[in-house]
Length: 191
Image (cartoon, rainbow, N blue to C red; front, side, top):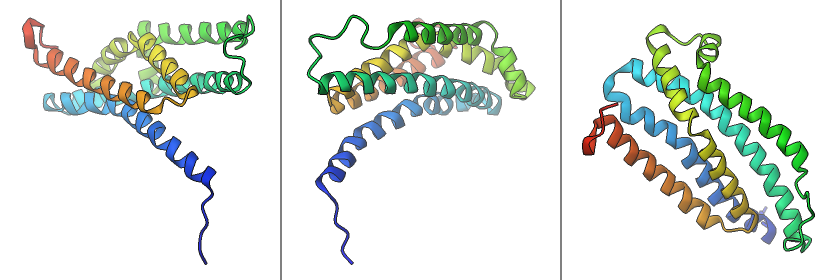
């Protein structure tokens, strides 16, 4: 029995590889944080691990919203309506309500991460570190959201190599920033 693979299946597979690489690189950001802080001990690793659990949920929410945006934008591109988008192509009233909910969630992460980590029963030795890490990383969630939306637009135009380049760049910036701030290079305080 010979398995026949259609050209469409091959095309979907080839289009999915860069998307897989981008998502993998996005998740590796938190893992690199854990790896680079590991020499400070298990409590530091546990703190970042707990913080990453929360931030992964945030990333899933942002990615879900960007997937919806990708679908809508791709429909408009496919219909040849890119230049003449309607005044409200994405249902901005609904998007505004969703953005408000996301903003409230983000603010609660920044202002009260203790509640989340109490619910998660975070160990006492990792609790304060998890709250601090979540405040720091959660404070950049707006940039993360913009990055994810930019990737959605690029994917809509099948600019998948550019998405991977952005993901690699993001990881390199994360590693460089970690190295500078964790070790106190270039006159920065050791964090």
